[in-house]
Length: 361
Image (cartoon, rainbow, N blue to C red; front, side, top):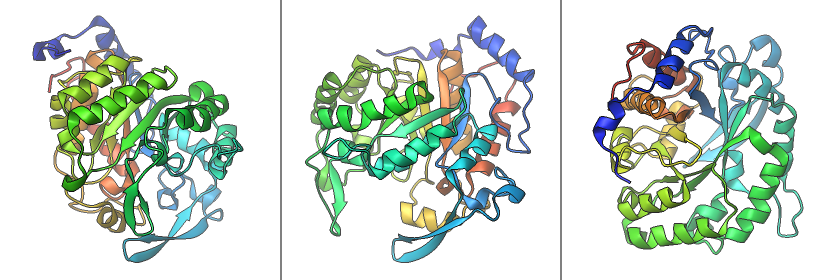
């Protein structure tokens, strides 16, 4: 499993040719046009439809009068979110190559009687506006991959944790029936485990192993673990066994991206040669604090982005290219205030690196 560090210094002829190709591709970083950044790098965001992106991603003349408003409670504060209609995803994909849909995290696609839920109906609407080359990352519902759920003001054990049958029948099968090859990744997000609730890494790995043995075989699975102690050899052995990708996530209580990559032996494990890097929140800043600091997501917040986040992201993308792996970089507003500007900084850093030479981390 272990790969030598020197392996990352080997530059394949394919990678060199792709680097040459990108210099000849037309795109415009200043206008937030990232779709053709590189044939093996897909830059996108976590969710879309933010009114705060009008003037960046969405033309004011098209969407200023199509804003819907809804209240949301974050911590002890209530804010009014402004969102655009689903049809705006057509404009989104003029700018970005991939979109992570977050709303699938909150509900299954079919209910217990196998009837479509509201989440399924929203996904159907998205499907109507997708082009043939548009890529989606779907988050697997938390009722399938979280050990504990927030219910009635406290965390309680989740009886549906790693329910293979529910995953197959009520999420996986309807998702692929609806979207097919538009789905480039299925993301299992494991919630953070407080010290008093943590399971042993080996036991955690065993439960994942049993789950992936039972669910339909697919090369698009990726797992995000948010508890550093679980980033262990037993865990990575299970990922390698099943060809499941390690999601590298820049998130509150996780170590820097570079360190996560080191813990995973600097190896890309996904069977279809895809990797996912998610820029979620600044390190050591909780979700509620990050959300309220970034809201309404229309500008970059001075000093909010964690130092090294952009540099680590680009270095990992370069390492992926060297290995013939497609890198999907997903940016959240909470990582610094405004996802399009953060993506702009990632793209600028990527293009500023020496053309034709891929440095190891």
